[in-house]
Amino acid sequence: METTEQVQQRRVRRRTSRRSFLTQGAAVGVGTVGAGWLLTDASPALASGGLTKGDAAILRFLAAAELIETDLWQQYNELAGVQDSETPGGSGNPAYTEAVAVLDSDMAQYIHDDLDDEISHGAFINAYLNTHGKQTVNLDKFRTLPSSKATGAQQIGRLTNLMQLTVDTSFWTRYRSDSLNPDFGDTLPQAIPDLATGQHPAIPRTNADLAPHRHLQAIANTAGFHFAWVEQGGTSLYPALAQRVTHPEVLRILLSIGGSEIMHFQTWQDKAGNAPPLTDPTTGLTFPDLNADGELTQTNLIMPEPTIFLDRKFPIVSIIRPTETKDAAMGAVKALTDDGLFIGCLPSSGVFGNVLFQCRDEACNTVDDNVRPGSSQRLRGCCDA
Ligand SMILES: [Fe+2]
Ligand SMILES: [Fe+2]
Image 1 (cartoon, rainbow, N blue to C red):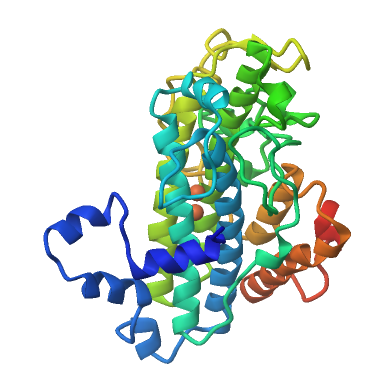
Image 2 (cartoon, rainbow, N blue to C red):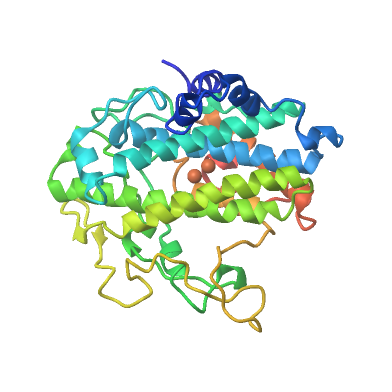
């Protein structure tokens, strides 16, 4: 079975994606496509003396984040996405796929394509680092978490746990509020309060989770909100870190990849709004009717409501939020940990937490004068190691 990194390498050699198909069909040289992927010495950052230590640290942190994103999207794709040569591994779980499709009949394609995008993000950033003689990120030896035992999932070690999630759904109200912004210290209310406490599977753990029907739908609904949660994180992380890079080309990378995270988030929050209100008869997990309680949760209000930005003296404005750069990397690690993604890591994989922390500390120390080496607060879970 190919590892994600092997898939990435194969894709670099021969891109056969939905996007490159037209390019290749138009007889634009495959060599041209390949050269773009391999980032030859045409890179302006290379021409101007190489990457700074800080820019490389930020890229490494993002590469680690992208590999984590890839791992979780891989698990979703194996069970509810389109399995093909671009995103191999699983064989699909028809009942779960059907439950996820309640949110939109195109969900399987969207899941596949989001995975495709995440694979490309990690591969690109690592290739860029490598081309500039900088250390790259490979988390393969930390793939120790178990797979779902449900039909459709391959049995391999994982970086992330999608079976004990605590999903912070305040992003939902954050983008619907016209007066609050976490960058001002505001706390937004949860859209799905039950998801924000306890531990909930977003994929079937075994085939026993495929029934009763409303239990499985609650798992699919959880996935629907988790999809949006993951991508709102990237939506904020890229602009937050972009403020600390120095080279225009690195800024271009962060703005360009960050923009695709925004496109993911916007798609997923629209689909999450289609999750049917229900109570899981097995666990009691309740998805309330988001259209019963006013504009702060109304499902079709997916355009970012104008809100306060920078200073209250300015008029409210439609923006990504939060984008505060201070503690952005530390905040991302804490959010991933608090989400439950690393629950169950074996003690031997504590070094996985250290990889993230090293990336984070490098990025923080370089970009944030307020964070000094060794002063960072340790987080719970595997990241404590
Ligand atoms: Fe990504
Ligand atoms: Fe993403």
